[in-house]
Length: 347
Image (cartoon, rainbow, N blue to C red; front, side, top):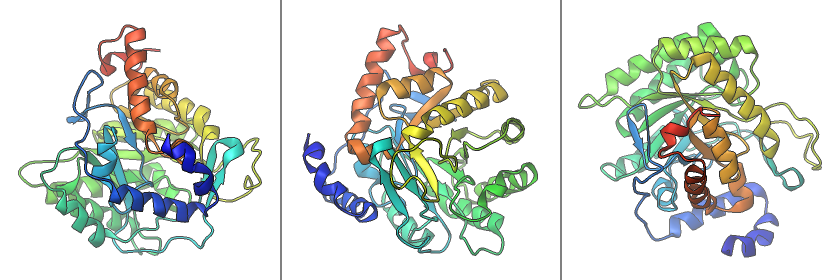
């Protein structure tokens, strides 16, 4: 594969520069039609996904290449996190490859060009096919972070297949406190109200909530209760972890969120806990350490209706999504399931 040939040269570059070059290369690709619905199609919160494999937030922060990613075979992509105002994020270096561990550590800090820049690109997609979720966040220096989320919901509702509320990044000080029961209820109420104000022609994109893997059982129960009360469309389980464990890389001590292979077991455990806490009444999106079709299938069997990738693409390239989609089709047939929906939670 081309990526395999290029990987040594890519890995010789600073990771953040390599990522910008990857976005530039995707921009230069000729357009392709997005994936069509087939045997792997699944419906979540009223949204029809042609297959369950998506790109996680953080890869396409500024909504520069959603159409290209969809053309590579992904069933959906999630752009962002996007904040109301542009912000530079944390000081560099802030992105680290840990190849010995199949992992990435980042402390990006919601770096993005802001809502206005993203809106211009998203508006240009109006009427084009494909599922594009929009991950919304708050500016680091916002006096009222809940108001920031409401502003983003109001701005992005007309352009979103779904809205993903990100309160689980470890790289914005105090952000994860919004997962506390009272703060989370107030935040979601504000987002729901703002979405209703901005809805056009009765279209209300569902709200997905992205949670951290570093939660206690009490946290899981509280979040599940709030999600059920607010009829959220899905829970995205999970963001990066601040835990570490045994890592071999020289970058193991870097602060920030750890993703990739070391997150896999923790993210799977949290997914199972949320499945139990919600009684299967809310769809789950499995994220964290998914690098093969077998990983994705395990997450689906554990209760995920959708899965997302990011860190594995650092090591395997953007063609990974299509390979996992093909592998999922084979695994589904092997295990005797006619649809993804039948397999969800069947372990």
